[in-house]
Length: 179
Image 1 (cartoon, rainbow, N blue to C red):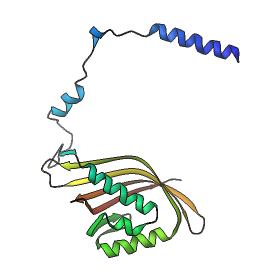
Image 2: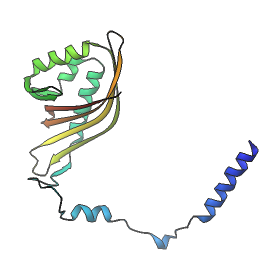
Image 3: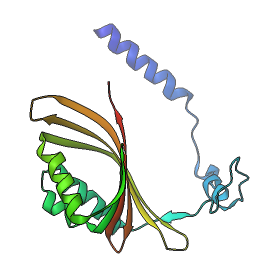
Image 4: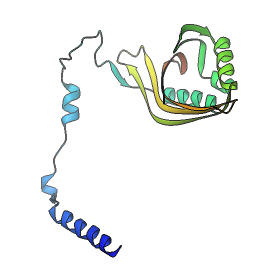
């Protein structure tokens, strides 16, 4: 054990001797990100509105996260407070506009089939189009659940919420089941 400690500290001493020190006169300014964002790009594909998005509202992010957290906690009534009167939903095998009541019934049915549900959040982003006409919040997370029969499963999830006036008007959900 003592030999391992000596080897570790010896290696640490050698590597610390090889580090170049930077004096205050040698400060390098990193402008690469700013330069790239201001450049006109010649992308290999064309779309109607390239580079169309700016950072969006923290309030929209909070509403999307609260909707998911309420659902995770089994409180479908609370979840519904964050949705508009009608919502366009796109899940695997579903692509339609539904009323808030229909969405509540669907969420209640799904959630009541679960004994437990947990979410591990990885990241989120809120964006708004430069013309301020479209707003989205995207969540990246993992769900783990146990159904009423005791079967456990999990999946990687991405939710895209189209927002308007703080309400969710569209929900696109992308799922990758683990093996």
